[in-house]
Image (cartoon, rainbow over all chains, first blue to last red; front, side, top):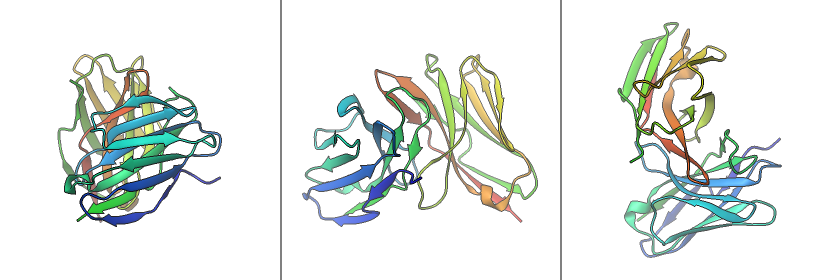
Amino acid sequence: DAGVTQSPTHLIKTRGQHVTLRCSPISGHKSVSWYQQVLGQGPQFIFQYYEKEERGRGNFPDRFSARQFPNYSSELNVNALLLGDSALYLCASSLANLNTEAFFGQGTRLTVV
Amino acid sequence: GESVGLHLPTLSVQEGDNSIINCAYSNSASDYFIWYKQESGKGPQFIIDIRSNMDKRQGQRVTVLLNKTVKHLSLQIAATQPGDSAVYFCAERSFQGAQKLVFGQGTRLTINP
């Protein structure tokens, strides 16, 4: 079975641009969470979606948004990119909303120049 | 506020020795803790978890200890192998209507031959 898949794996954007990152959860998993991992730090929670509804939001500006589709895949959108948005963006899937075990994808490395 | 931190950012051990990675957490209401392993260029990989009603849990070559009195978590790895070299994160689950994991900064474990 495929694990959590994220695309693209690497991305370079210019300040002020917009970016869309994609995530496909493990088959059967209905919850998707997004995390930002700045180099040298632990992942920081951005969003959680379950059954296509936002269930949680971290301390990130409104430039960050996400959505979940009927097939439970998800997109993370970031507008007006800043240099500080450069990070590894991780997607994690879980079976249910409050299911404890979260499985992470390999991440998307975003570089803003 | 929420915070999960680590006492030691780097740890070097000889191959075959046991290693102990420590973690402090601040949210006494947290009921679930997880250790993740992250290798270079990859997403975090689940190692072992423990619920707050337990003091100890063992897996294959790994043991997690939880001391709720001093809000301390540790990961013990027995008979370390070169493949154990990675960054290890502890995380606690924060219940706010969503499955939000709060990660610490991480400890880089290096196994010396």
